[in-house]
Amino acid sequence: RTLVINASTNNPELVNMVAAFCMRKAGGVANPLGSNLANIYLMYLVAPLYVMLRWKLKRDTDRLQRFKKLIQTERRLIYQHLGMAFLMFTFSIVGFWVLTASHPFGGLSEEVQIQPGSFLIAAALVCVIGIVAFQYWNKRLQESDPELFEAIDDEEHTDSWRQFIGGTTGLVMSSFAVNWLFLAWTQIYEASLTVYLGAAIFTGLHYFVGALITSLPEMNVAMEGYSKITRADLNTALSAASVSNMTNLAIAALGILLIILLKAMGLELSL
Image 1 (cartoon, one colour):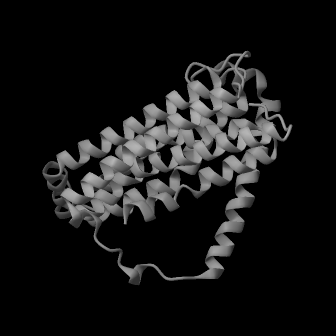
Image 2 (tube, rainbow, N blue to C red; image 1 turned 120 degrees about the horizontal axis):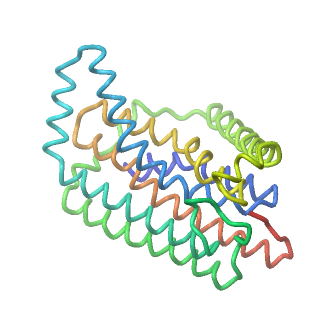
């Protein structure tokens, strides 16, 4: 349940990254890596606070108290998801460092660049190790508490090719629009953005701004899960960060392999 729901919300990260590659900008791989940070503060801070504030404004004290009680009861589950989300974030930071010999915080220097092939392979392996670690934990959680992964209510999910095609088309168009916007900002506001993001402005924009935008679908899943006030839906809401962070590592690994392939074909991508 959690893997299907939350992994599907990572499509924006994938399409944004590929759109950047189409513009010969390897900085697009920073989008899924940066989403591992955005997912943590959106899903574990913004989403629950928003849900509780909404109940408070509506004076729905019953739901508010039930939610607080659920959080107290399921502290162990919450800590597990928090730990895995931060672990996946750590793997993404290490992967970013191996990929660029730098980190995204404090601004990327002018010397930063995509590393040679062996480092690219190492960066992909870092992401894969993170995925394996998550799957091991997730399997143990499913075995120890199977009721958390009960079947999805099919009545709430209907098949619609029109919605699928329309949504996919809109996603592709908006992804290219975001990348064009970032390229424009890189040119127009270069002096100002360099102060905050360093020399690799496009990469920095994807890591912080693009990642925030593409993490909004996960936040919507989290808010819906928190609002239902059940153990299974709380698990789904918490997975909006932990599972999505694992999926982001898979997307980043795919992106790194694409960079290796493009370099082998003689196409050089810049950050």
